[in-house]
Image 1 (cartoon, rainbow, N blue to C red):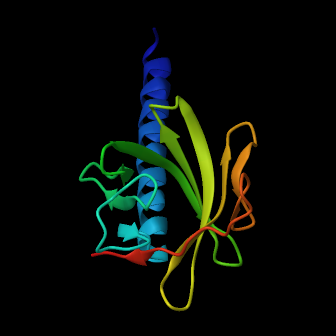
Image 2: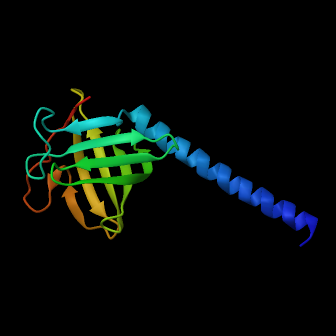
Image 3: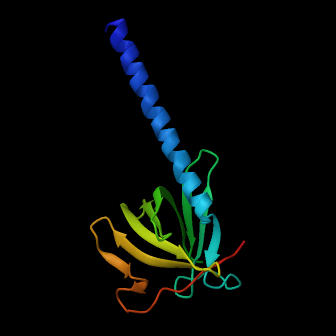
Length: 150
């Protein structure tokens, strides 16, 4: 391999590493500036329960990854947030990889003026919604507002 080609490859590898690090920083900055970090629940005093309400936590790890932890009481999982953007209406659009489901899901969150968090949509990578327009698709019931627990 020529010296010029080696330098070109080294520069490309460095650029990819820098771009990935910059993207991770932007992701962390987006969720932090939006106000997502911390724990959220419908009722912070209640024990986490799959039917009565989970405790949902968003955090930035020391390595810069943004993680989404769900505590259902009898079950817990940890999933990586791979993308976060905010639209003009203030909706936070997250893409989260769920290893247990072997899929990435996209969901949108809004915070009210009272500081309550609501899921506006949740869909699979195939576009199948479980929440649409702030309501559960299966029942038509509105998604509950969550409060910050920490």
